[in-house]
Image (cartoon, rainbow, N blue to C red; front, side):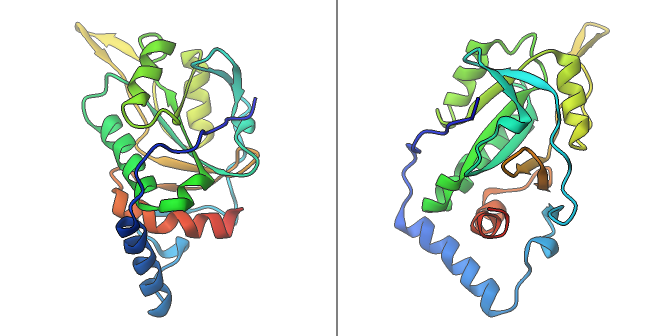
Length: 210
């Protein structure tokens, strides 16, 4: 099944779009850094990571694999969980804001979050949580061991949740993967990256990877 991202509901202002354009123009005019020089982005386009062969499912109950990403857009992929107190909601909020700042270029991207806590992240819980950021964001979940293997296929070190001394411990990846059609990882944004660091690179990613 192809991931379909509906037309964004976000209010993309001309001011935000102009700001991103100015950043890009300035970088070009001054010979600024490209993807390979961006400190917050790891460019793997010369040797992309192969698509994981793990099969999971969308929150709508449809089978979903990493090779099922859209064939005419790039996909921003994140491994996280809905009860995460800080990193996961902050990451999704930064992605949402970056897409808002990117203006029409946001239409060239899908956003997928794979739950690293699929036992507690039910389909309904994951869908409701993502809707707080953008109803167009896709939620994916499946067997926890399969999820761990898929993350590691992309170089994201996560562990299966475990209960230790009364505490339920869940790990997540801090990186935002950039998948090309077919599911290869052509790069990744570093953990803690902010919207104003993501947004200027989005049109560059579209130009170089699509």
